[in-house]
Structure formats: structure tokens, C-alpha cells
Image (cartoon, rainbow, N blue to C red):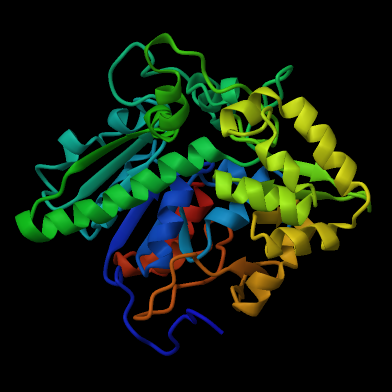
Length: 402
């Protein structure tokens, strides 16, 4: 077993840090879940009776929504109707003890609630405020609605992804993930900066800018009016052979060549046609890309006589980088994840659920992997901490304020 998370009660790096999050959907919840993994207390503010609308996206995980299960473990749920003065008073009490406020409400909504950094900073000088939005503050796109697929499109991702005939989106929420991860790392840096200065700061994270940063390679490839990388399906746009190839047992193998040494080994060991290495049609990567249709016929013809196991054995012997074209079921059962003991269980209202241990394993502490909260599950406990008694809490519930 490798990189095993440390056992016991070693302190986590963000223990003692309190995060208040006005969050929905994916970008902000994904950010704050990373903070919770490191030990932060994350109090998720949700609308009474409705909650984060991602709770209702689907019912795929024993009745719970797949997106919600993924992004909301180890948090506390507090329902508050923030249009009510009493609810705003509760939020103010929470902010007095908070280190970080994260929000991805509709553009301008947080400011209208008096929750902008400028409004909060005089009374809460150590508070870090992280605003996550589609297009960032200012500019003509500031108030434009932004969902993951829309940002994938706006950032040019769709233009270089898919087949020559049809663009395609990514199969997961990469714009939300990108913004969530930049928000997460920026909050960590803001906490470090506060240790030096004693003062909180404001973070403005844009989904568009997060995705455009990720588009650096295709943008520079198309620099100064040059043609962009062509859409190449599951193959590499500018290296060949690099992509999926069918084999004789009806499955596919993904392989990738990086240099001329590997090309020569591929010809001799995998294809058993060493003379192809010096074929003038294929003697450099640019020529292989130019003549890829002819080369593909040669590869597919050879692979048709072999099983996936046989092809992978030859690729490993070469050695040429390769992978299986896995389904979701294959990934759930992936032997490497099992052998490294990367799965654990988290609690939920529908019982224990499997969860992947966070990828960055530390030798110093074990990641927090706690319960997925039901809507408003922690309201009474949190309000009790703030000094409200049972009768007041009962009135709040009766009036629909929590």
C-alpha cells in the first residue's frame, strides 16, 4: 500500500477555520468541499424548503443527486431566508466568527444583500470574501447568465473538442471545476497572506477566465491568426498515432507516441513491421499527422488480429504509453484505485456511500470525510451556538425563516 493517509487524530491544516458559503450548483460547493476536506468548518446557507437546487438535479445515488453527493460532504446545512431581517441578523453573527465568505449567487445578488467585500470589510477586517461568477465583476458580460456548458462554449473549448464534423462538450463540469479549484487555491493563499498582514482580502474568480487559462495551449497554437488545433475526436489533435484504436476482440486501446524512438519501437515490437519506421510517409510526426489515414489503416489491420490484452502486452514491451478506454463501471472497479486503497465511505441520509479519498495525500493528516447534510440538518445546533434558545428556534421554523 502506497501513500496511505495517516491514521489517528493528527490536526488538519484548516481546523479552526470557519467558512460561510452562499452557494449553489457546482463551482462554489466544489471549492468549499476541498476546504472541508482539509478540516475547515463549512456552513452552507440554503433557502428554506428548497435548498441548493443541485439537490434535485437527479436521484441517481440511492435517491440523492449525483452532483450534490460529489460536492457537499463534511458540511453543515443552515436554512435561512435572507430576505428576512432576523435571518440577516443570524448571518451577521456567523460572519463575526467566520474567516471566509464564499458566494456564487446571481451577479449583484450578494452586493444587494450587503455582502460585498466593501460593505463587510470595515466591520470584519480579517474576513476573506471570495466571489465566484461567470464573467467577473465589470465589463459588458458582468450580468450575463453563466452555466458550465455556456462557459465551455464562450471560452472556445467546444471549438477544439469533438469530431471534425461536430463540436462536443466535456463529459463533466470542467468550467465549474476550474473556477472552483482557482477559488480554493486562492482562498488558501489569502489565508497565508492574512497570517502576514492580519487583514482579509477579496477574491474575484471568473469561470470564463478560469477556462481561458486552461485553453492556453490551443490559444498559443493559434497565435497571431494561425489555424487552431483541429477537432480530432478522442485522438490527439497534433500528434499521431495518439488516440483510440479498435482491436480484434471488439474493444479499444488508447495509445500515444511522443518521439521518433518510440515510433521505431512501435513499428518493430507492436506492428512487427520495422520497415515502416523509415517509410518516407511516416518518418516524422508532422508527416504521420499528414498521412494519418493511411497509417491508421495499417495499425487497425494489425490490431484486428489481436486481442486487447495482446496489444497492451506489446505496447508495454515497446514500451509505448497506453490505457484502457474505460467506462464508469470500469473506473468504479479500477484495480489501481483498489490496490492503493483510495476508496472510503461517507455517511448520508440514505446510508453509507463510497467516496474517493482526496487525490493529494498528506503524510501529516487524514482528509476529513464526513456526512452529506440534509437540508437544514444543522440549523438548530448552529443557532444554539449563537445563543438562540429552543423556543426561538421553534418560532423561526414555524415562520419559515429557517
